[in-house]
Length: 381
Image (cartoon, rainbow, N blue to C red; front, side, top):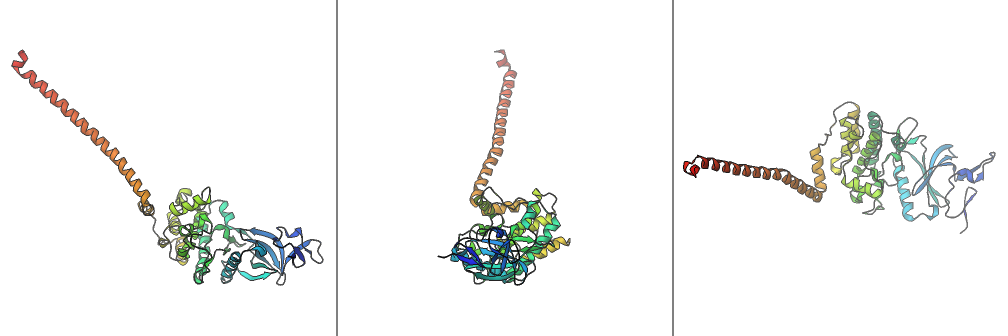
């Protein structure tokens, strides 16, 4: 198969575009540097690369605006499933017009290469902020509220993100968060069924238990609410709710363990914000906030100094919930406790009983000796 060309550039079939546009390309008239073009887009530099796609900072020449241009990493070699997922991302994001969501400008195909362009955010990801350490509580609550407002809008349009995490939140020059990367988005109506039951997709440290278990049929808006709580947790503590040495250990922890209370990691937090965070992170989806709008309102109450609606979970209730999730282990634990109690209480009781019997025997012998000594006939003998 002959090589393909992109605006005068020769690219061998199946090859990806170079990481550095200045490594090759057409010479732009009047400029001594070599510039890489992709249709109407002048590629400036690569800004992100993931498992499926690569993103460039680019200039759309006709409109003379800076955009982010995303392409399928495998190019023409991409599988039909990868292409379909790529367009699901593009179409899901393109259907959302909200100031808290990165806008989609164009979706198309050029020289058999699938692409879409979107708004370019001049700033850093929220993940970079998390790595700097815990935020001030009110700042963390305000940012989470803004993200939640964008997600509430997406849910109202029938779109579930399913991969919310700090790395997928961009902070613009004004300090406002923008949600991006709808690569795992799911529409509540007419879902493509790309994710089969038992298939786990997402980021383990920020995904809910139902997603970690591969229960795709049960994943709904509550999954995003969990992830919003996980983002808030990371902003407050500087780490996700669950992190282990490997992916499998993290998935097990997500499904079976309770997160460390944020105030244990950051003692300066107040109980109300911790309560909001932990309610989002409930294992049972029915115990989380019912909608993202409810979470927005609850965070608003906290920021306004008003009483929140959620109540803190006591140690007894948390332990009871763990017992319901792990009945077999709870039964063994109860048996062990019973055995310890038996040994701890029964042992001393037996010892007391033996001590009493010994004392009683000694008293009996002492009385016998006293009576014997008092009898005259026996004494003369």
